[in-house]
Length: 180
Image (tube, rainbow, N blue to C red; front, side, top):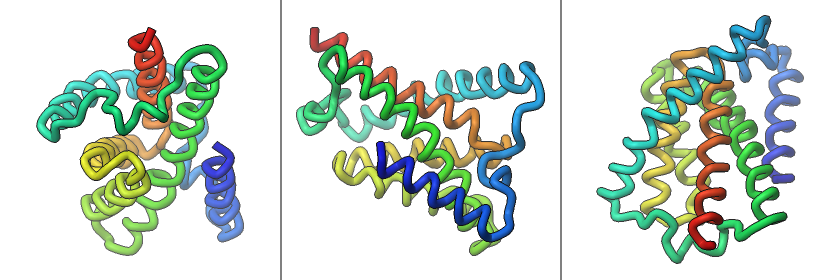
């Protein structure tokens, strides 16, 4: 978590130091409760649509829901679950800011192509999760591409942050419940 928050702050400091607005990475700030609810609804809707797609792709890749290679990472109860949720929220905020808010925009500036920027950022996101195994890199990279499309379409990373944090949190909670 510490590394992710440090990288998050490093990215924002670099953006600020370059003279660009931090809003260029995060999107415009909310001005009303309606905007908050809109982003929440979009994040939930994205999650609902992406979940069956990820399940099908995971099934095609023959990825076990919580295979033995990932068991060491999953929370058991109590404090571990609380830390898991904190880590999940951190991942949602920091990874969406870093990969979609910053890197995707950098790749867009370099390639002048939104599809290329989304794919390169998604591949980078997948590779950053290589510790989970090659098949998971593919699945996570595809999830990253979906998040990239969402961020590009909305012009903000907030709905992706919501969906990402929720997805990661729910995985840990379900894994913990299923163990006991």
